[in-house]
Image (cartoon, rainbow, N blue to C red; front, side, top):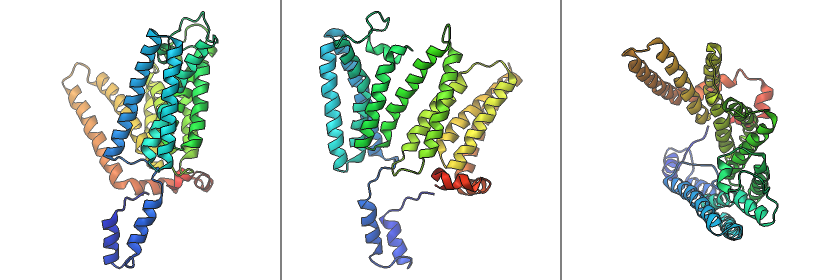
Length: 346
């Protein structure tokens, strides 16, 4: 269980006799000297992340326009300058202990790797000339095995950047490149058309190992790298599961049970992210049942509103009894799991 303690709390502890005079200042100095790599919902951090996302979007648009109007050499030159600039500034800020802005700029640099790689390959004449996808903007829209080299470059660049700037958000562009790679590789294993259900299945299967790796990483590093891994894994797994078409009532019931398991994992791991995805999935299933049971009835919106109120009540109960529920669940787990997975001891 994590607690937020400020100077006023420590001062009250001194007045209550829990701490000796002077120990509160020593603790404050100790906490201030530690790198604050764990994410926190602060206004400045929100601004940092919003700024980084705007930079990524703006640079992608600008460089794509440069390629369309000037060509490969301009794309490589501009992309290389921006990549090196954001990487160098990010590393400098990181070493000066400006961890969030430095880490975000490093993530921006990683996001530029596929674009710079694309420009370099075209300039060197190594890009397939007969390909139907000759523009970089197709990278985000179409599944094709020719993108694999860009994805490999992004993953390697991200891993290298993590060595220099161990900031958890850098996991996200790496995970995105891995997801793209799973789609491009999946296309090779499906004969004929690579339909929507096929893509959903590949996404689901990709999400499972991402979640397992994140579970293994959870609690082993100082920064919260697992959060972004969980987010990427849930987006891939839950998104693929939700988008799969099923005409079977058993299949839909199984979908509901999986979402209940996700909600259980939220309690077990103390990760509200699982509760969000599981709650949305459960609400969707209950809404589906309500639509069939109360079809063409004025009771349908009433039932849907009751589902929403029920989820709010569930959230309140979870917040109030989270620690007790977590400890109760963990008591039923094998001791070997508790010993080998730090995530179960958070």
